[in-house]
Length: 90
Image (cartoon, rainbow, N blue to C red; front, side, top):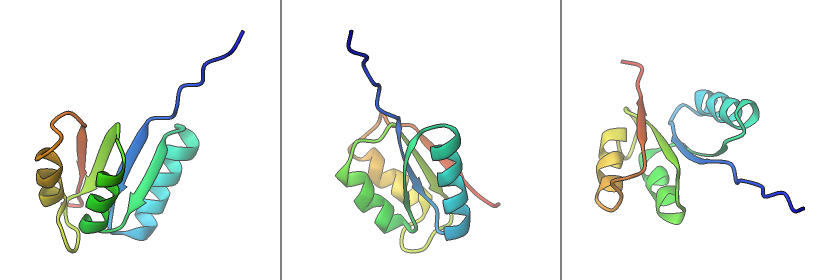
């Protein structure tokens, strides 16, 4: 019998605080076995978004170059299905 391996869910994490982003990425990857890609500003996050299919997006609200809300708006122009979670310190 061949065992089918389900790929890990893919998460796009966009967080401009590199240290917090690394901690969150490592937690999601190592503890929960998600496949997490970290981008550190909104434009880099949008470029990463366009290159792959994601199961979940996690966006910081306040970021340079493109806020999390602006990034979500750009994502929603072509994708109304992928869940988005916002992070904020406010």
